[in-house]
Image (cartoon, rainbow, N blue to C red; front, side):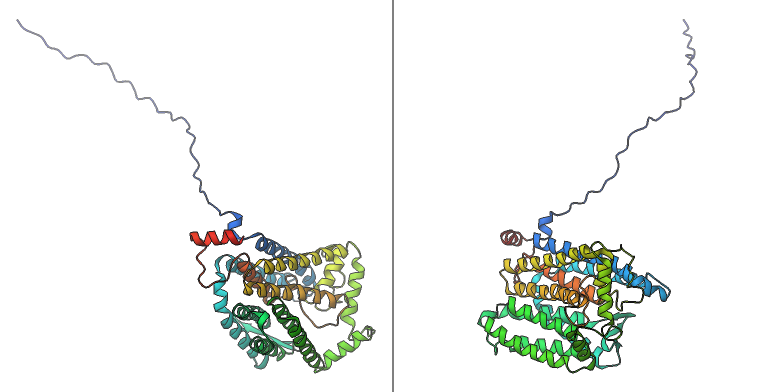
Length: 421
C-alpha cells in the first residue's frame, strides 16, 4: 500500500508591520554639587566682614565709574579708569577669598618677615631710583609688567603682619620701651621707606597702624603715651620739612580763605557737598567732576558721593565703616591669640582710621594730606591691598594661630573649631 506524502501548504507571509515606538520620558542627567554648610566656611564675624567689604567694593566701582567718566573721556575712553578698577576688584576679591578659605593662620607667621622685607625693598627702589614715577611730587609708583603699582600700600599690609607676629611671641603687657625696640625699628623702617617718596599721608596711616597694633597688642598706657608723644613730635618735624605741606597747614589754620590757590580743592569739595543736600542730585549728575574738583575719583571721591547721593548716602557710607570697626573689635576681643588681636586692631586702624581721615579732609576738618577712601577710591594697588588685608583677618577669625594646628578636615580640627565658635 503506497503512502503519498505531499508538501504541506503554507500560508503566505504577511508584510512586516512598521514598529511604532511610543515616546518614553527620558531621565534628565543631573549633577549634584554638595556645598558645605555656611558655618563650616567661616564664622559670623568673618561673614559680616566679607559682606561689608564686598558692599563697599561694589559701591566704590559704581562711584569710580561716575566720578572718572568725564576726565577719562578726554583721553578717548570714558570707561578706562572703571575697567582698570574692575580688574583690580576681581583680582582682589579672588585673592581675598583664597586667603580666607585656603591659607592656614600659622602660615601668616612664616610669611610675615619675607613679605615685609620684599615690600620695603620695592618701596625703596621706587622712591630712590629711576624705576619710580613721580605724581604731584610723590614718587611712590612703579611700573611692573605694564601696570602701575604703589608699593607703599603693600608696606602697610606687611607691617600689619610683622607687628602681629612680634606680639604673638612677646606679651605686650610685660614690655617696656626697651622691649619694644624691635617693632619700633620695623615701624621706623616702613615709615622711612615711604617718606623717601615724600608721601606724608601714607606715613600718617602707617603711624596709625602702629598705634593700633601697640594698643591691641596689650602695651601699657604709660608706654603708649611716651611713644605717642615722641611720634607726634617727629611727624610735626616731617610736616614742616616741605614748603607745600606748610602752605596747606597755614591755609587750613587760617580758615582757608585763598579760594583760587591753596584752598581751591577744599572749597570745591565743600560746594559739592552743599550742592548734594539731603538726597543728592542723582548718580552720574555731579557738577564738580566736570574739571572743577581735582582728584574727584580718588582722594576726594567722598565729595562726589555727597553731591550725588546726598547726606543720606554719606551716612550709609559712614555706617558701613562703623560696622567694620565693630566687627574688627569683636574679632579681636573674642580671640585668644595675641596675633589675631593685634591684627584686628591694626586692620581697624588702617581701614576705618584712613576712611575717617579721608572724610575729615573732604569736609574741611583736617588739612589736605592725600589718602584714598578704602575700597571706594580709584587705585588698584590700594584696593588689592585692602582686600588682601580683609582676607587675612577672615582667615584668623574664629581660629587659633598655632604652628601645630590640625587640618580643618581632621576630626581634631573640626572639634577645635567647634569649641572656638
